[in-house]
Image 1 (cartoon, helix red, strand yellow):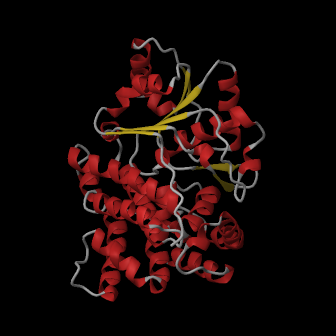
Image 2: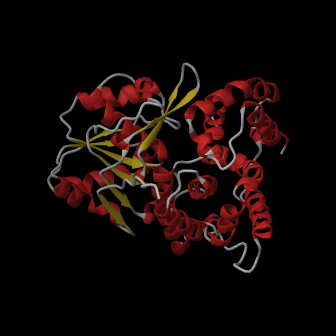
Length: 388
């Protein structure tokens, strides 16, 4: 049996109100001069002021960089790095969804090692740590609070650069589902499908292990029955808590087993057409799963059982059929648009397929898929997704 390489945040605090323990966690880690990396929306909501207030009450001064953008860019990271260097900071607190968390990781790494993000994209692996990162997610989706990767867009080439390594793994994560109650339906749906995709891909990945299998199955059991509930009733505490826990479990699973073809094909869609990451995953998930399933029928059948859409008495073929039906139904119920409905130009989509295939393959994620496509097969999958 091969040895699985597992990496986790040193401190995980999970549950309602966990974010209020930031001062205690900083003290435990011997840190006292945080830069908070967030976005203007959370500042406007007063969330950042509340976070700073808890720090101030503990005698900890902080500064706030709120210039993060959706799908963080090289320019936005450089702006955050310049802001950090104006102060005397010993750590970075990422507060927000995947974009602020990914931004915090990149800023913290560059603060210690310098260079540009292009120097650190895959296949480079950056294990030597940067400044310590404490992650506080406000969306239940990316799992970035528990992952050793950040994704930064090179705006000159429209490439989403996947930058892997232990340098990006937060030293602590405060997972507080109470921060998700104000999420709108579209964001709840997109981030929920994102985390479900993480769990499924981690489970079917060629790099899966018994440890990641356990986390992935737990995540599917938490997410699948609760995603529609949270979308229909944003104040459903039980559903919100399950989605937040599932997102972190899925993050732990995929950062230690890797994602696969859906994510590989999804990143170029986000980079070129500015489709939110969870939404581009959702566009792809039914089609890519149907194409991949024959190569790992038993694995996909277990996903169906974990999600509660098939039971143990049903054979693998039938269970996978139910999985595919469920993924399609989930997209319909949650109003997931196809590329055309999102407003993407057909000619531009078609013209960029060769570039998207090249970028997907270069990311390395498709190689983890049970069935690995060549460029022509991947191009056909992009065409099928357009056709719906």
